[in-house]
Image 1: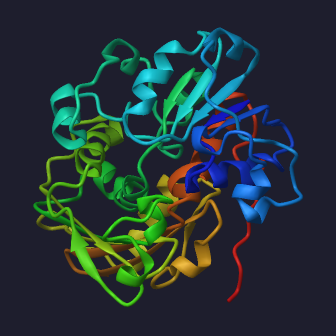
Image 2 (image 1 turned 135 degrees about the vertical axis):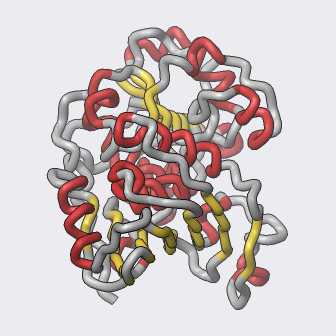
Length: 343
C-alpha cells in the first residue's frame, strides 16, 4: 500500500500503525520536500523501525496499479487532483476534507475552492466506521471524517437517531494543537498556545456542514431537525479532542444518566472502539489510541454527553486504518490494539 503525504502528523500516525499491521506492507510513502530522506530521520519516533524512504509523488500514476490501497494524508485540495488519476483497481482512503461534503456550494463556502471532481465524489462513502460499516465494507473509495466531526457524531449520533431531541443542540469542542498540522502558524505555535485558551472559527468551522450532513442521515434520515450550535476552542495540549454536547429532550421525555447510557449501549453494541465511562471521560485515557470514550449526565429533559478522542488516531489515521480493515474484509481491530499510557 501507499501513503501520499507521509511527513505530516497524520502521515506519521499512519506509518506508526501500518508498520506493525499484520496484514499491511507499506511500499510507497511520499513527501516531496523530504524526498530521499529516511522515514526515521523525519519521524524520530520511528527511527530504527523501518528502512522506508520518502519519495516524490510519482508522475506516472498507472504504476500505482500494483498497490492494493492508497491513503491520501494531504492538505485540503490536493486529493481533488490525485484521486481521479489513481488506477480504478486501487482502494482509496482520503483523510482530507475533499470528498466529505455532498453539496458543492457548501464545499465552496467552507473550503474556499471549487470542487473539481464531482463525479468521483458521488462514489465516495463517508467513513465514520461505527455508522457506515456495511457501506464501507463494499466501498472502493472512502472519505475519512474530520476529527471534530468524529468526536461530535459519536457523541451525538445515538440521541439524534432516537428521535428524542427537541430544539437547539450545543457542541462545545476543544482540540490540541496537533490538529492544526505540523507547520506552525500564528495561532498554533507553541509559545502562543501553551498557556492560552481561546475560541476560533465561531459558526464557520468546516466540520459543521459535515456534522449536519451525517446527522440527517443517521437513523435512516428524517429524525434530525434540531438547530446545531458548534463552537471550537484551542486547548494548550498537543493531542486530544474533548466535546461537551448539551441538548434538550422533547416534551414529556426525561432521562437519568443511566437511561442515557442504555441508549448508547444499544446503539454501540459490537463497536469495540467506543467505550462508555462513568462520569466524564479524559483525553489522557484515549491519547495514542483508537478509542472514543463517552460519558453522560442528565437532569429531566436536559442531557449532556461528553466525548473524548485522540484527534490524530480515532480522529484521523486510526479510523482510516479501521476503514481499510473493513474494505479488505479484516477484523476492525486488526493493527489497532493501541493502549494509552497511565499517567
